[in-house]
Length: 113
Length: 111
Image 1 (spheres, rainbow over the protein chains, first blue to last red):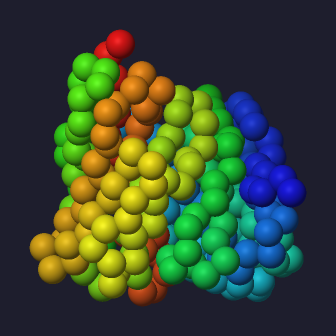
Image 2 (cartoon, rainbow over the protein chains, first blue to last red):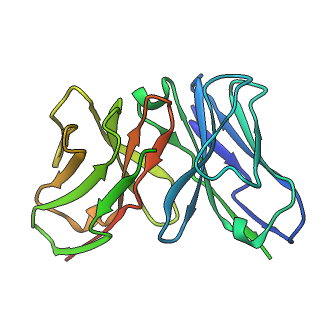
């Protein structure tokens, strides 16, 4: 039982490049979340999903897209990376959304030059 | 719109002291209040979840309280140890299933 797994762990991109971050959970959780963490800013919610095939915007969705084609996977895409998207990205899942504890992955450190 | 504030931003205390971390939220229509711990370079680990109908929740040396009417929660750590050094974050899940975090309190326990 791996819990929440994020791929890759580290990535360096040039401005304008695109990439996809993968979050996979093996706990059969309905809800999944993407956050970014910047120094002094805490965790900010980018997008979230309340079930397979659904997505919704969080606090800071601009510049990101997401997809939840399979229940166990939640993908975060950057179509045209900008230096402002340099951050640590965390994925989390929960069986019942805010009604139950969040389980976090170990994060992806992304640098955009 | 839910806003979550944590005070203080950083705290240093000598080993063995009891301490209190504070969390406040603006929208009281929450399912619960969650406290997490984050070690440097790591993900977040759930510490305590206190339901909106509860006043307190305890786990070992940790005790969390919740006062929905005033929009406040506290995390009490008894007999602090150097291993308690970490960043502590609180989160307030709203009924729209957005889970909003505070910026955290960096705790340093001095040996």
